[in-house]
Image (cartoon, rainbow, N blue to C red; front, side):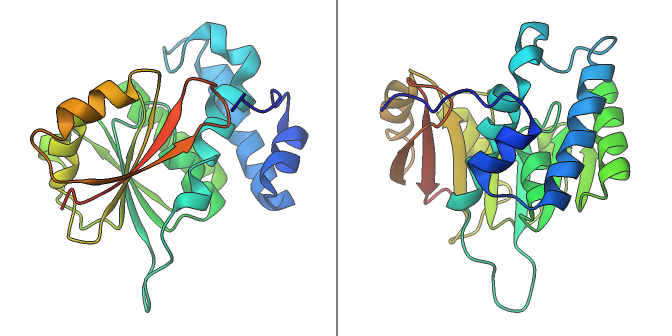
Length: 210
């Protein structure tokens, strides 16, 4: 399936995702901060900035419909590993994913995450540490983008997982090869979704990492 047409700006992003005007405005604040900070801090590749609404925001937002239902009596809890500039976790938080924990060890990136969270009111907790040192939050969902091969991702994610935890991992053209390797050590259940932003990409919905 070919990717959808590029999302050029916030209005096109809103049309593609159906987010509210308030959510769109909060994401515009995020995008403006990203462009400004990226001039002095390496948050994302500079070549991706002209296409940031597709490459980063829509790429993150496409995970939102795959989130499990909100648990009865409490907020959904999401842990985003190696958050970097906040993709996908911070985007999902602004869209209403629930209580989102962003784990990132690079100080300049955590400063950016704190700034965006403050300016947008996003319900996130930023953990400025390595994954192995982060609090073992019991997560309903674990996400990560461009962090590590699946076998390593599952090891990281297992610290935060219980029997019902879902992993949502965007992957590129090597997704199936990584799955083949990971399945040798992990008894997982996998649903593969096409990516809206990359013809060769896949979103891997993983159960069984807890």
